[in-house]
Every structure is written in structure tokens, then in C-alpha cells.
Length: 504
Image (cartoon, rainbow, N blue to C red):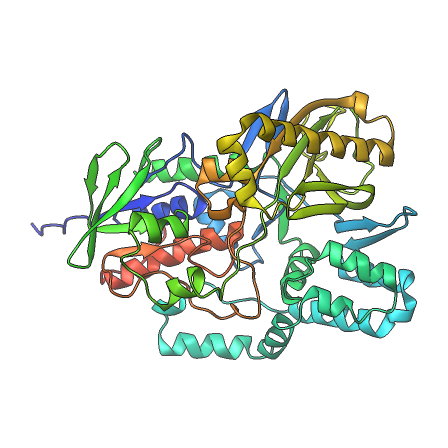
């Protein structure tokens, strides 16, 4: 009788979506995996929590890959029965209004978007139609993401190149133009201002095109039930596949000998050995603490030492439970403030952006609304130090900001103060405490013209049997992206271990 080869054991650090996705696909391929998670539950940044009858989604604004026509759908569907979920598709990407409460609606449907922009700024017809043509062009694109480039044959690479050739010149061009730079071409001052609100000003224009493509094709929506539902279903799949999950286990060191990773050490001193170590945790913590800065190559230095990569600006996350129905308002609205709100020494906002979740019955009791706000909080060290050294002032500052947001809502919509039933404020210090995410940001790197095309940092040159996955290893974040990375990492490990990759 032929003896089966012994399963290789893989330890994964971090039970966020990247770690659990990698764990699932590795289990499908015969590896024995264990996930070690610092927190008491899975999900990492993909998390929601309950407060006084309201469910606060701390992560998902929209989730790409919700339709079988979108190329990342198969990755999701391998982990979750996607047909069993209900997705909410908004008519608008966002809506922005000025001081006179005149609005521009950035519709999900590209034809409606074109009509809206031309109606509000006919003098900008040429510049508007140029953008609309760009969106329509990428409606035809189907990115070939079935394999990572590291596992492709020459024939597969040529096929990918051929399929992407019609789109590559436009991608390269509009990765080098920011939303702010494109908005400068508008003659209409209101459209210029609102464009920079609706689409992140310093982000490449191309990164605004793709969400519009997904929304138009109904390939990106909000999952009713939110972040905890998604992460919970993936955890369930991982356990069904035989994976082992350890919570409240803080990994402090990755064990190496002769430039080979062979285990981990926990905060309590316990050590666990494995054939392969995967970090799906915060990248900076992994490199400079768990590996003590002993292994660094160009990909690592580009991210953490050469400033080629820039982190996304952190925000606060303010949630309000309102005894009032906001379903007559756009799901995402920007409105100007009569009085700016100071967030921290580096951040003051004169516009507020709020989202409501009225179409998701799990978010708030019937007839009530959950509103969330994400004002920029660039001085993450201020929040971290304040929480550490002056908890009273830290709590007072959170309360002040929430109060000023309520005051602004009251001035804008009237009769809000007496309707507020729940207030919750999350700072960069909170994100650092629960997820260990460097700078307390919800997404890792800004997508910029300098990082486009940079390779994923799957491995560090000079360290064997060690891999990284998740948003810190890549050039950007996003739910569908990190789930795809879990699949791609499993393919890379299978190739390196000389075995055929499969999905079951």
C-alpha cells in the first residue's frame, strides 16, 4: 500500500480575511494549518459590533465581486455561498451638496451619471464626456486574476498581455492623473469641489473609475448583515475544512534559524513549530518586531524605509443611533459645515460625509437609523499618546467631536439632538489596540502613480519558508483583493512545494 506523504504544517498569523482565506485554500490543498489571532474573534478589520440595539459595521462600504460576472467572484464563492446572501445596490456612489443645499448625484448607472453631470455643468461637456468614455471603456474589461503571475506559464502570461492590451495605455495614463488634477479641468466651481469630495482628491483617477464600473454592472454591493456576517462565514468554512483557530494568542516573534522560518513564539513564551510560517498580520509589526528587522529586501524597504509607499490617512469612525428614519436621504451624503470641526492637531474638517444603513434591517431597529462618519484623523500618534497618558482627555475629545457632529446634523436636518440614542467613537488608537494596524488606518497603502505595478511582497529575499499576505504585502487593500490574495498565496505555496493546486 502506497504511503501518503506527510502533510506539511503551516502557521498563519492573523485571522483577518487574508489569513482565513489563505487558511481555507491551503486546507483544500492538503496542508495542516493553524491560525493564531491576537484578538478574541476573527475578522481583523472586517468587523461589526453591537451598541444599544444598533449594529455598527466598522468595515464594509461596498464589497466588489458580488456578481458571477466579476472576476473575483469565484474566490468569494469558494468560501461563502454567495447566492445565499442579499446584496444592497445603491443608486448612487455618493451625493454632494453645497451651502445652498444644491446637490450633485454621482449615480452608479453611467448613463444617469452622464446626464446628471451635463445638467449641472453643461459648460464642462467635453471634460465630462471624456471621463464617461473612460468609464464605458473599462466596462468591457475583465481582469485575468485567476492566477498570480508567479505561477503562470509563458503562454498564460502572453494571453493575459493580449487581453489587457486594449486597456493598458488608459490605465497607465489615468494612474498618473489624480482626481484633484482631473477636477482642475472643470470650469464649474461647484462640480470641481464636489468631485474632490466624491472621489479622493490625491488618489489616481483610475481608482475612481473601477468602483463606478463595478456599481454600474452591479458587481459591488453591501451585504445585508454586514462585516461580521462575512468574516463569520469564512471562519466557519475554515473550521469545516479542518483548520484550527487560536484566539487571544499574541505572536511576538517568528522563530528562524539559518535563514529559515520554523515557528512562532507567543507573548506568554510558548513556542509552536511548523514547516511554513505565513504572516497575514500588520506588515510593519511583522518585519520590525516579529522578525526583529533582521530580514529586509527591496520590497520591504520600499514600503517602510524609502517612502515609495504612503499609508492611507487614518480616520475616526463615529457611529450614531438615531430615532429617526433617514431612508429618504442618499446612502452616502457630503454636506458643508457652518463651523469646521477640529479632529486633532493635524486635522480639521469643513465637510462631513455620512453613510446610513437603512436598507439593512440588521443595522437599526425599525424606523430608526444608523449613521456613520469618517472624518480624517491624520495625527494618529496624538490619539495613541492621548489614550496612553490621559484617558480622561481622550474620552473628552471623543465626546466633543461626537457632540459637534450631532450639532452639525441638527443644523442641517433639524430635530436631531433629541433623537440620538447611541454614540460610539473609534479612533486610530482603537484600531491599533484591536488589530495592531500600523498608524491605525483601515486600509494600508495609498494607490499612487509611484506604486502602480509594484510586485506583491509574498516573500522576503534571504528568508525561506516564510510568506506574507494581505493588504500590507500588496499595493492596496480592499476586501475582494485580500480574499483573492489568500487564494494566490495558496497557489504559490503549492507550486513551491511541487503539488497541483485545487479548489474543493
